[in-house]
Every structure is written in structure tokens, then in C-alpha cells.
Length: 317
Image (cartoon, rainbow, N blue to C red; front, side, top):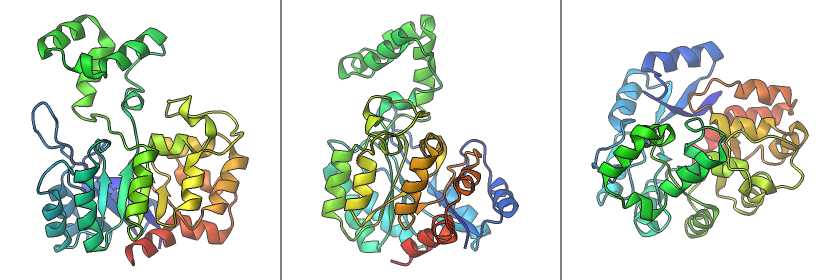
């Protein structure tokens, strides 16, 4: 089978019909369709990439859609919600995309439920500064000010003051607008190590800028999603994939594409070594992920694993 293991509905204006048209065009058998649920700390609203939309699409196209749901672990009833949807046919806990550093207690309750349901878990790894890319200039001053805005002291300022600053400082206005849609999340390698050790029977699929920039040892210095230049030394993403049998990764989104496109010789070695642990996906970004894989001239066995076999086997756990 050929599987896109990372897609969303109503993200980047992608409808249910758009998804089916995309699958047909590229001859993909099915896709993993994921939610994104985040409770905004200011207003309590729940993010719009809902399980209801995912499930409705699944009911319309049951042979083409693998439904997945990740409730916000900060909700007290998150474990119960996950198990309830599991009983209706949801196959994975994805995409888990919320701030969990310092909240591992609540995260573990959700992971207990995923373990009980024998579900894989897709973890988005990102930190706030990366979310700002594309909304700010390359000005060092802008970057410094925006990082300052994310400190606990600045976030403690009254909303009225933030609004006043937004009127005269465009990058803040853009950030304020975007973070209500994509508020920024953080799951670092220290937290990842904890869950990998404590839940060896759960298959975790890592995804996102923080993971992919760390296939290189210089990943901690350059926080931009678009990584460039030769990779001289491998980073912790490689050692984690090598050391933890329950860790996988999908190559989706700009972060996966740019990481694999920056140094083709390194990427060929990386993809060959970890071909049994990597999943093809796009995250609704038509950047040519499959074309990139083909250009690297991997062997047929590695390509079959990447393009669907690994995703199939993960769901058969």
C-alpha cells in the first residue's frame, strides 16, 4: 500500500473532497487523518481541526481514511475521550500537539489510555520561536523582541497593553493573530526520552521542526525551519531513532522536507539506515516529498517501507 501518514482536514483549506482527489492523483491508497486540539489559555476555545470532521470524512470514505484523534492532555477527561473514540474506530492518538513540558503528569494519563487501546502516538516537536517563522522579518531586533514577548513576564502584561503595542509594531500584531490559530507547542528531547522509556510498548512517531532540525548537530543553533548546508555531524534525532526501538518519525511538512533536502548524501545514508522507522507524509504541504525520496535513489525495499509498509505495520501492533 501507498500511504500518506500525516494529513489534516480543514487545514490549509483542504476539504474532504480535496483529500480524496489528492490521494487519487498520486495513487495513494489511504491517509492518516489527524486532529489538532488545543485549549487556548485565554478563552478556553478548542482548536478547529476537530475529531468530528475527521470522523465524518472517515464515514464517507472508510477505505481511504485512517481516523486519528489526540485530545488535549490538559483536559481532565482526555483519556476517556480518546477511549470513547477508539471504540468507534479511531486508530491512533494524533496529532498530539500541545505544550506538555512541565505537564507530563497529565500527558501520562493520556498515554496510559493510548497504551490500553494499543494506539500509536504522533508527537509534534516544536518550540515557540519556530512558529514565528514567516510572520516576522529577518531583523535581529524583531526576533529579539518577539522572543521577549514570549517570556512569562511579558505574557503577564494586560491584554490592553499588548493590543496598544500591536497597533504600532506589526510583527507583534502578526504573532498575536497567528498564535490563536497555531499557538506554538513544545516537546523537547528530554521529555521525549521520558515517554519513550516509560512507554516502551507505544510506538511514537516524531514530527515537526524541533525533531527534524536535530538530525544535524547544529540543530540547536539555527532555529529556522528551512535548514541549509552540509550536515557535518549527526544530531540527537539520529541517536534517538537508533537507541529507542519504539521511536519512529514521519517526514512531513516543510521541516521534514528541508531537513532531507539540505544534504543529499547525508539524507541517503539516514534514510537507508532508518528506512524501517520512517513514514512518508505531507501534512497538507505539496512540496514534493515523494519526488525528493525518488531523487535520492533509495533501494526498492527502503522505498516500499517509507511509502506505506511501515505505516501499515505500526497499525497492526
